Image (cartoon, rainbow, N blue to C red):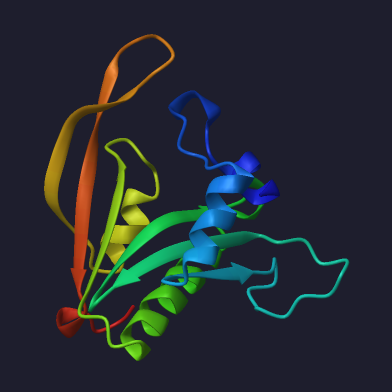
Length: 150
């Protein structure tokens, strides 16, 4: 939760609350991953969490519901490591396609594109900014048969 609070700009309302996250994990078709500042999954009680993902699978498709790297750990390659892990685990779970949705101006768009995600749809004016203007949501897909890894 602390990564989410630091990573998601509050003005867009993208962060989930603790109840939403725990409800998703209880359902049973969701999974998560954490990454430490050194890029590992090994955590000690005094280790900060640098980032996380939360995904939900149904049949042979999975949606990346949440993905975040805390601001102080960005631009260190941790997003690539964590996204590669998400994709590798999805493949190991026999998923055929991955989906995600993001704001049109989300800086993580470059990360997703580098890993093969491609735009497959637009929700016009989905997000509202504090000033009242609207931003499109982009739906993206990665077909795992086409994914060679990066």
